Amino acid sequence: DWNNLFGIPWGITGLLSFSLLFFLFLSLRMDMHAKWAESFTTYSLLAGLAGVPFVAFLIFVELTQVEGAPHICPFCTVAHLSLVGFLIVAYIVRERKQNGMWA
Image (cartoon, rainbow, N blue to C red):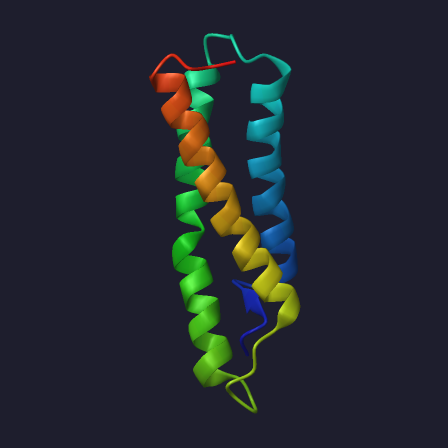
């Protein structure tokens, strides 16, 4: 009952989400001084923040709803921690771009 979002498996949802985040950061790396670079730093942070409610929901499901709860999925935990790491890096990159400390 908890393994998909509107019929799409969570794994595919995560793959697509992390692909978007990877694309945004790879684009920044390819041309850090483009006109759109500052916008992409903001988009990266916002896209990462959009994942936080889903992570909170999935942790809630792991702790309370699945059979044998609490049941922590190690693969899910790695994805959740990856998102936290991404958010930290995205925030730092955005601050550096806005403060003129861009490489």
